[in-house]
Image (cartoon, rainbow, N blue to C red):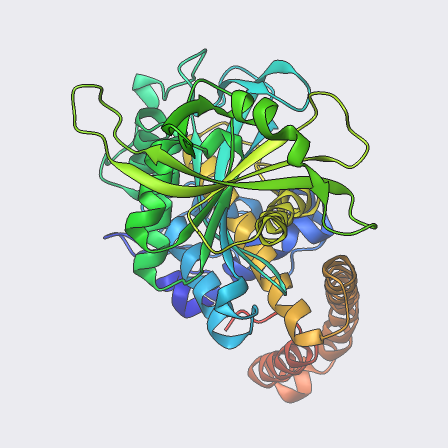
Length: 456
């Protein structure tokens, strides 16, 4: 981890005199132990020496951490992706044929009108507009769980909070500045396609890419085909037309018309199935412009409704996998649930956008650090075998708490030992006493290591 962290700096690689390992350890651990960085540093942070470079004023531990989080040149996105690649390389997420790239977005409510990168977003869960930061997440789901890969903050055009001119980025080419430009200038569909290409380029592999109806568009279907992965998208009940074969030739219908025409074909796969489905071959015109030649792509549409439904409670899925059965499409799409679990975990337990600052570079660092924390606990779960993700998370949090309080107790004992040794300074000399105390410190540090969370 420290090696990866050191590779993600920009041109200015200078840091305070604090070791990288200590900084990284503190940044990864504080959400498990305290509700804020300030509380963590005040009560439990004993492993951050606060010296600066020669000639500079000494910092408090929280100043050291916030200085690192506020740096514009650290490429946190690269750090998170390299961590996920390392986790996947050392662990089995399941066969590639049953893996899927998953995309979704989530909103974190932010208080205050000075939170850079925040804007108004429609929350379909609460059915209202809320003010906060929205993050588009892209990850890899398999039989063993979900691994976060890439993410991007998204700013809508409504009530967007830009950086004040007097507090702008020092370098517009820095990692944080480029990230904010993408947050402002790209739409979520473009973010989806960029992250898909980036993950494939880095070396992540999956057979499918899945997303909900927000990402179900011609552009994204075409992007999946070009990337060589099978698309499984939930589609909207809009005006988008599909062609189907009938006796007189091919006829165009939208999704609702197709459902009304074929709903009598809905049936359950077995008596215990909770959903009725029917499968339909169709063609989709991938061309977006009316004055361009049509480009028809054969797809499979799967309509699904609850087994006891008789009304309009139905959904339609599109897949480019022409051999997939209706049951297979639903099975693959069910992998999307893992990203919902991810959002719940990082918001409640992993410090997702919880730093007490409205500056954009802190938000940029926060979303990627939350993903790194999740990935490290996920790796521990894979190695543990039978434990669930929540059990592993609680277990690791408990161990970190024990280690932190052990550190506090050591500070107390150290003071008592130093007091006793001071009485011998006239006999042994100050130099000998200093060497004895350093030796005791070294031995105590070896005993209080984070053995179950790897930072090397």
